[in-house]
Length: 498
Image (tube, rainbow, N blue to C red; front, side, top):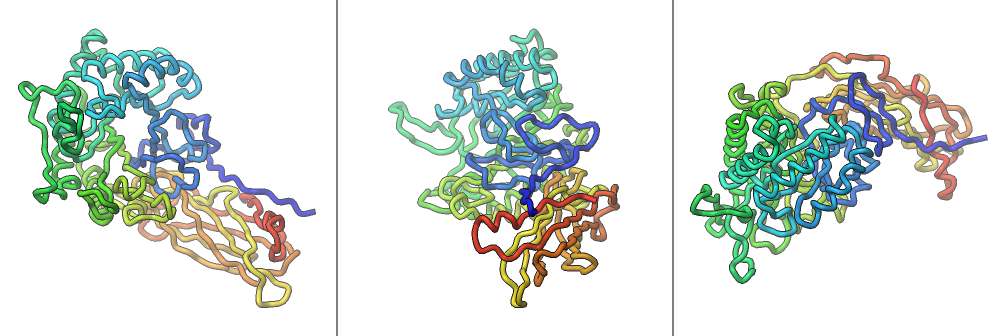
């Protein structure tokens, strides 16, 4: 009797790691703290496999983790604090904490925004609402992590906004030390947008960009930073020098607050202007991709003991989340995938292939392995030889040691003692997974076939820390070429790790 078993990939856990998110069917594979990369996801995203991207975090501006995402990818839960959302989340928060112990919470989403569909509140109101929510989190889940300050961009007027918020938070908490104890990481956005009032007295739009913060007073606040695309300043929205200067200045602000020893996470950034459509300001995919790579080079390669974070080799930024996975190219720039065609964009290809310099990120000895139960056999066609069948064989490989570097490997597939093929692969950074596909031709049906997949390191990729998990075997019947959907269901078998 033949039994069809559809495979579910499971990944072995390492010791000394936090428990996996209970909403995920996967177990942890690698330490998230060693991965800086992340992605913002526009729902729905069930058709995207985040494990292939090389990311260690994602957010979708919600609070419920998508069960399809492997648990080695951290989920950032966002609690909006606008006038509508704040009372609702304050009521719901104890239950959310109970259901998601040890979770990561970002309080607020662009509270400094001039537009009302973001949080749109004063610095003092943000501090009050942050204090209330952070206190609930600390009381109910001491292991949770809390992020403060998700401003649109770290410009002088918005850092001043945070200064006002921090002063108010200290007043509410009973001093700066108690206020800082409510903050586990600083969570800013790092877009490069125009700062001018968005609306005139009649409520009509008069400008574009980030606007000015609620409560902005030109007589007492720093000057806004302006961008004039009509004067040829389009490039400024993806100017790496502006990006660098703002982050360095923000790290100095953190030090001035006595908070140099806290992580800085950029939980939204990118090149926002679309590459297609009728908008007066367009940015090509190539320009967005180049800007993205420049930001990664800077954030991974810049280390400064005077202002950086000691636990991360004095880098300025500890985690970042690129915007986005799948926004339509006519609405926003920087998407990794076109949501209509489901195809990778130029930005997406650069995102996946990006590898830092050896100076910025040296090679770390990996633990590459074949993912258990990932070896699959699917009939694809009848062979030219009578009574024989051609099959597609796929297998997935990964690295138990999370790193900001990709890992070069070779995956060999055998049928019995016969080598079917050897394929060189780049295993994604951050404990990601890479699928490898082979054609197994002219197999005799209804005869037991033994397949074996083995992964090994290519030179220059360190020393494999564990050779015991490099091999996976599959014993199955090779079925005839299916002629109906029901027969196709029998073409996938579960492998057994040896």
